[in-house]
Length: 498
Image 1 (cartoon, one colour):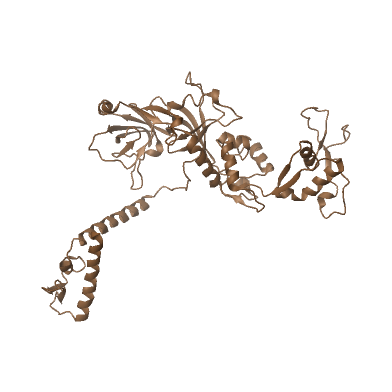
Image 2 (cartoon, helix red, strand yellow):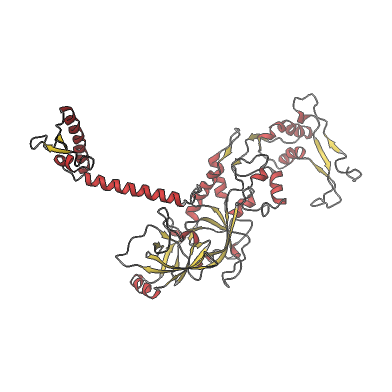
C-alpha cells in the first residue's frame, strides 16, 4: 500500500478489535486507505491516508484536549475512540455528545455544501449564504454575534431546529449599538428640486443645507458626520409610486412627503419617464414654511455626490425551513438580489476604503437607514483618496423581521377605502348623537325621527312618545321599552363627558 502497488479501493489496513462487541464500530475499523492525492507536505510520493475514526482520538490525545465534543451521530464511535487510545497507551480526553445546531433554511451536511459550491449554486465556500465561518464572517456576522447566539441557544441532546429569526435577532441587538448610520438608495431615482433658490433662502436662518448627523443615536462616542442637501438628490424607488393608495406613505404625483434631516415637505410636481413607464426623474418643490401640512412619513435620500456601489441583499437560501431529500429543488432563486447601481452617503468613504478590508476579519458594518445592516464585502477595491474602485456591500440582516407584505390589488384598495369611509360616517353619526339632549332623543335621533306625533310635555318622562305618527296610542309596554332605550342614551352621554 505504501509503495503504491495497489489501486485505490483495492486494499485497506483494518484494526483487529472486538468481534464479540454489540457495537459494529468495534469489529474492524479502517485505519488506512489508498488515495492517490498529493500530500500537502510529502507531495505525490505519499499515497496512504488515515481514516477519521482512527486519527480522531490520537490527535485529541497528542494535543492534550480536555473535552472532545461531538454531535450525537458520533455517540457509537466513543467506544472505538477509547479502544484505540487504550491500545496505544495514550492520554484519554473526556468525550461528550450533543445535538447538532440545526438552523432553518440551510443545510449543514458537508456533502450538500460541497455540491452547492461545485454546482455553482453559490459563489464559493465563503458565499454569504453559506453556513461556514468564512461565509458568516463575509456576510457581517461577528464573533460576538455568533458566540451570543450559541449562548442563548445552549447545548442539548434533544434533536431540534433553531429558528433563523433567533440568529437575526441576535445580530440586530449587537449591530444596533456598534454600527454607524448612513443613508443609501439601492435602486435610485433622480429628484430635481425646481425651487432650489427659494428653498435655500428658507433654510438660511437654520444654518444652510448641511446637517450634522449622529453616527449612532444611542452612542455619542461614535461621533457624527455631515450630509448636504443638493439641488439634485436621489431617493430609493421603493419611496415613489405613480399611483397613490391609502396604505402608502411615500412620494407620489401631487403628493408631499417629509425629507429626513431637512424636515421640509418634498412635493412631486412632474414625473419624467423613458422607454414607456420607466421613471427616470422626478421634479419636486421643497417647502419648509410654517403653515405647511405635516407629512405622514419622512424618506431618506443621498446627495448628488453619492458614492456608486453594488449592494447584495441576501434572503433565505431555501424556500422551506427544513430542506428535504429533494433539497436542490427547494433552493430559493431570490436568495441573492444584486443592486448594481446603488448610491451611498459619501460620509462613509474613509470607513469603506480597501485598506480596511480583510477576508480574515469582520469588516466595517453600517446601518443603511430603513434598509438594514450591511457589511463591506471582500470584493471591494474602493480607494477613498481617488474616489475610484468598486464598493460592494452585503446585507447582514434587515432592520426588522420581514413578513412578506404583499402589494394590494385595485379591488383590495377600493374595499379598504369603502371601509374607511364607512368608519368615518359612523364616527360622524356618533358625534352627532352625543349632541342630542335626552328629552329630544325620539325627535332627533335618525332611527326615530318622524315615527311619533305626540310626546309627554313635563316631568321626568318629558320627551317620551305617547302616540305613533298615524295617531295610534302607544301601549304602556311599548313606552317602557322606549324609556329603557333612552336611558342607554343617557348613560352614553355621561360616559362621553368623563
